[in-house]
Length: 131
Image 1: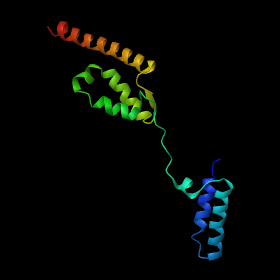
Image 2 (image 1 turned 30 degrees about the vertical axis):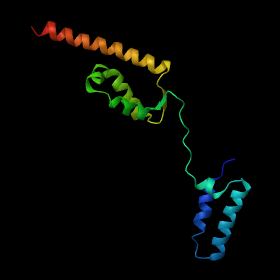
Image 3 (image 1 turned 45 degrees about the vertical axis):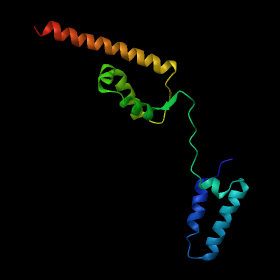
Image 4 (image 1 turned 180 degrees about the vertical axis):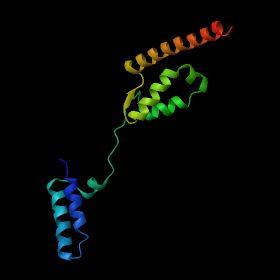
């Protein structure tokens, strides 16, 4: 069961009252609320645990940081994939990615084909058009 945190916050704000009876009643009501839900104060105040990712998964922001640590030349050669990784990390930084899965592999292959076509086009333009 989940605790009604808005009600609990309201009760805790009431403990700041000038009237001791009101403050005591508020903290007792808060304790009763926790007791009814079988929750302790430690459970309520504890920072939520982040679920560990399975092997081969990374969060999008972490994957972007890993990609940024590559040398500049490979990143420039794979610039469409670089753009994809940057956009994904900007839009959904906490999204888990299966870096060994088929989706990322397909996107990488498509981006690399686009990159090869682009660099080939740039090379042909430079060789044949700048005479």
